[in-house]
Image 1 (cartoon, rainbow, N blue to C red):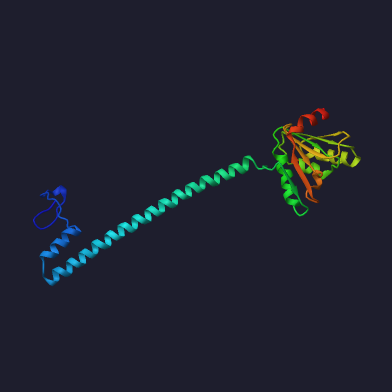
Image 2 (image 1 turned 120 degrees about the vertical axis):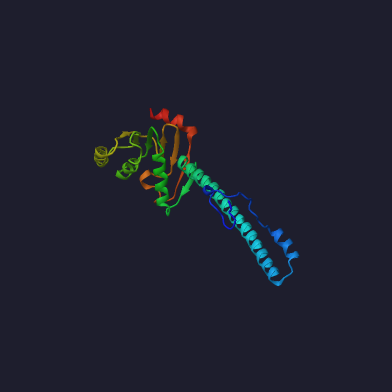
Length: 224
């Protein structure tokens, strides 16, 4: 809205006229018509402004594209990290056999703890060398998971340890059974692990372990 010499507000009336805008090409055309030094200098300045404006636009566009690329990359990395954590959480025990050496006490302890905590229903341990350390490790199982230990003999000390354990933690049952030498750990009556060392001694010396699910049926028959 324009009056004769000034811009007026719409509410006060005035004549509507379209704006006049010079593009970069229009300035270049005018520069060819105006030959005075002042006109030429002003045209050069205006053209430089147009050039700088265009360069700034492209730079900003480049920055926006890079930021968008970073956002997309970060999103993909977040998905990959989430998948890794999900995989680790759902399948923390992936080995079916291996060896732990005497300088891997903590690794062996973590291995046995993960086995125990993976049980959903039952744990059966065959081990002739059971003490309070064994009972404490088995206390890492979920509270609703039942636990039975088969061992060669029940000493007075083991009986006392079991009594003290069961007074504080979910109950463990110990049954006396002979005729086995090696150590075995059965998880949910579905996974059979052969352990080369007693649960209380894992990592103190070299020992091997292996998963032997194909023999689980024979072992369970002899336990029942």
